[in-house]
Amino acid sequence: MSKKRPVTMSVERGPHLFFIFFLCFILIAVSIPSVDAGPQQKVLVLEISEAITPASDDIIADAIEKAENENFEALVISLNTPGGGLDETQTIISAIENTSVPVIGYVPESGKAWSAGTLILMGTDIAAMAPFTVIGSAQPVQMSVEGTKPITDEKIINALVKFSVATASKHGRNETFAEEVITKNKNLDAQEALQTGVIEYVAPSIPNLLTQIDGQEVKGKVLQTENAGIENYEPPLSLSLLGLISNPIISSLLLTLGIYGLIFGISSPGAGAEVFGLISIALGLIGTGFDINIGAIFLILLGIGLLIIEIKVPGFGIFGLAGLISLIIGSILLVPMGSENIYTPEFRKVLALTVVAPTVVFGLFLVFAIYKVTEIRKKKPVIGEFIGETAETIDPLGPQKIGFVRYKGEYWKARSEEEIEPKVEVEITGKVREILLVKRKM
Image (cartoon, one colour):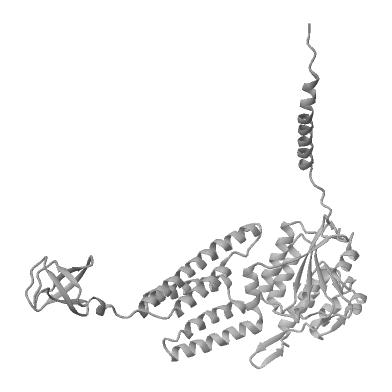
């Protein structure tokens, strides 16, 4: 005969079962992928608001690699530049052509893209300008101490014209303007550029431009940019520093200060100005296009040498401070800035931390060591403090016998005007260089 299950059992299990079902519901809800309410597509925006310098190459290359690796819909290069170096311009155009990411050139409101900026704009996959902006004036010039001088050499002009026309032809743009912008310094505003087929769009803002180009096919990809999120590109620390010193004014100033620093340092030995002069010259050379890796290694070696000098030679910390600055700058610039397929952004951040952090730690240790050394140097001689103190002879002493005595556990060379045997208490009466003068204690 089976027994009926007491009603109290079901009443007791009810809350437990409810709790179990609740937990299962929570786990299932958590495991379901969340639907992002934000835009699925994103566009990377890079602003170039200074002259085109060697740093511009690395910054644009880094932005392109970021756009490739993080699946950006497109890269927008906002150009507001007076121009720049021809070699750098050709490198940038080549990088734009070789990437699979659609690159959009845009001249923002109140901006300009003259000279090198015009060539870069014509080398992008989509070219656009804000109303009332201007492009043009791409005749090459030569920089000298007397200022800028237009280049008229047919060999250079013809080669540049051919490059400009070929760039425009690849993107179906006005080849006549591509030639005349160099030979006649021709200029166009936004409406003229649109009507003559130099650009494809006129847009008052980047969001408006993204709406206009939505659905267009570029590099085998249909753009979905109308509701795309916009992310501004921020260069890493090394590129930010390189961009700063690549400014023509800054690099020229660094070279000038470096030369004067060397002159002042050599004419006034011991001032340390020549050290900062070397650092300034190295940074100035890197800023003008000198190989960044060679410059960084030079700064690191210079920093190590200065730190060694600070430890070996008495000073006031000037060599140590200069060495620390040189090491930190060299370490930052030496961080790899190459292909993202080799160095991911996360790896580069870790690498920067592992390179710079030990330098900072060592620098702090050096500052502490210099502080302690300075304290010791400021101390008054302590010989007067132990005159009259008692020591014990270890060796026989005499007028012609120098031996050792023990004073507070330390061994000192000592001499006496009288003969004194070992293990005898003596009184310290003076000191000549490193030798103590003692006498038998009464």
